[in-house]
Image (cartoon, rainbow, N blue to C red; front, side, top):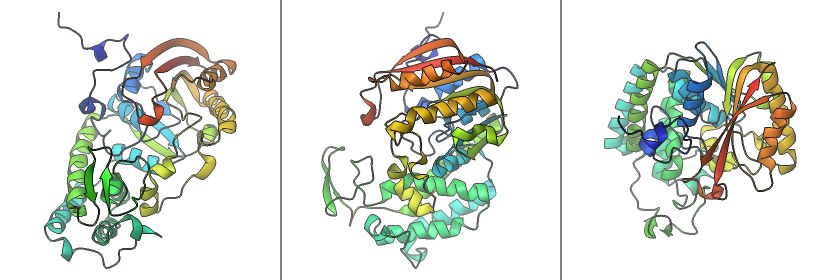
Length: 369
């Protein structure tokens, strides 16, 4: 008998053997999103708990990991998030686009990459203060790309803007060794994350047209493959999970990795995208931004789930020293959910801010309205 890999064993939830090729497969690579769970987790849960025809929900959708996997497995799926950038990314990963229009756009990028001086926009202004963040030639190229993208249809335009958004920080003057966009004190600095190499923002090569071209080509191929494989329909919705019932939708399986009480400020992490694309920031409405509101907010979401869900709810959450995250589990129990299974994950490859979290729990509840 062939030897099973660690991640293939149904009793192993660490997935420690997986690399970027596996965790960023299909359309999952489209846009960086801090602290998202790997697609193998929702995929396994869907295979275990969803019956044919079941609808899958993720109330804290983020960039759409659950929705992609549910659609790939043939399930209709919907998700909500209060962050408009997250919703746009999830839509880019799952929605159909006009591939002919995308091909023509990439052809224009090809031409612009060869002769950028002929295609730069007249204005370098992207948002208030953008002169600090982007060199003039880069800003004028980004402006030209945005101007041209406005002539595309809704989903196709969003697809291009998401591809551009993922590249903004790398094309900006922000330090390469900081997760949060941070300007260096001068144009020349030492990159502490990459062997202290010298970076000069005034002279380093940044061909925005070429970078976006490469990104969109790769994304376009992946979306074609996804759309050919996925028989389920995905609906990413800009909405507050504390008001799920108002959408008048239902599901038989919900899978989510909720924000933690000390959640990352996604608005700051993706501030260049918000400002360049003109997106409205959700502000302090994001769950996890205010510690005192965390458990009441999560309780409100759990209460909503009991009203829209008829089946199972899988909660993926890390252990906490103060027991706050475990209290979310208890809120599910206090609202009539029945704990069916508990799986434990040891975390070995984490973002720097979460290294204190050594284990993650997957709680699976039975839920009836």
